[in-house]
Image 1 (tube, rainbow, N blue to C red):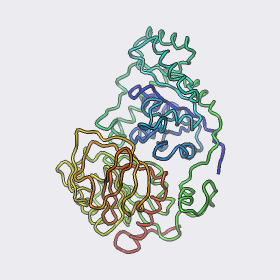
Image 2: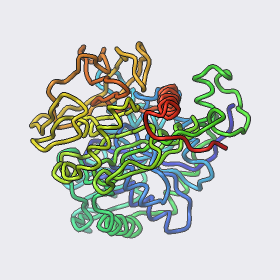
Image 3: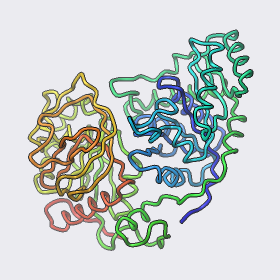
Image 4: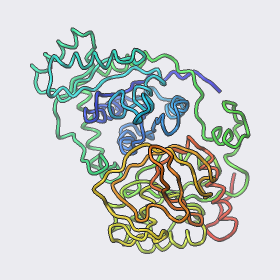
Length: 484
């Protein structure tokens, strides 16, 4: 059902990566939250790490808006779902403003997201090595696509008062408002490693201090009133509001797309299977919509930490192990032998397991020589090569996650390799940008490097929950919780 969404909103973009988008976006989120505003945080693209800092800044889940994985048609509905009841939404862009999926034009670019949300764009410019040329740069970005509304600029890494004057004069001549000026501040930098920033879960106390420092820097250097006024110029957004219940009903063909669904109990009537979801410092990558879809499908979602917990949650009948950094914690994960044995026994009993990237490595026989769960006849290790990019895939085997022939889009992002790269029964066949099979299907296990966004294919959550319910009902694993 189409509704009018009136949440004030800004898209924080940049000419290129490394300009300071995350610094500015996170600082703005925190600064506005400190003022008592309910701020909805969003990230364009598939990134998992930045949304963790956004959540810390706002107290709300960081949500991704990915036009490649979910399709342009879901960007506004997912935004409306995440921003419901908020006073302001801040969307951090990805790469440069007009950079998107390779060879696909504007698809999945920050510019496309801004247009789909009818949101004004604030361009963060690294001004450290320029003065008057900044006006030509900004003019080019403002005029490249007339449908993108550039509302102003925040100048980052400004060296001195004199430098600031020169930049402001150039941009005034070009007619572009300067909404903020940030000086070089290395003390606010957050540590990085091979896949980007270190996730919040690994440095929570330090991350809180970093976010507070970013808020202070943005508060001191940016015109928050002007930025809020700009956000309020965003016109009403007429779209459906994404709902996990409605998405599941539409996927099952229960109601036509866009029809309202009656507010009844989530999922099928009867017992609720327990789906255990790995978390903690080693497994930090997940999309908020996954847990929401599992819950709507009738599962009870319970988190556990493979670094700390020596047993799966009581009654576990489905296991989700998403992405993260097991390579950083390989010795600790290996040392937790009771849990490794429990995971192996669960898989051996036929319990449904959905493992993505880090989860794939955890299920392997070993990771960098350290014993893992041994569910898969494969070994993993760190590599010099970064594998990164969007993928188009088709399920080539029936599994607890997807029926043979299911098509979806995903994303790979890792510096590890697993040998072999696919089992005798692979998980996916990639159709673009290269053709190959990948991953493993064994019993109830579906393990792959491919990160997916289940909002694009809600049937995945429904199928996995049904497999967990069936496994619990058979008595082979776990047990059910009473529905209601």
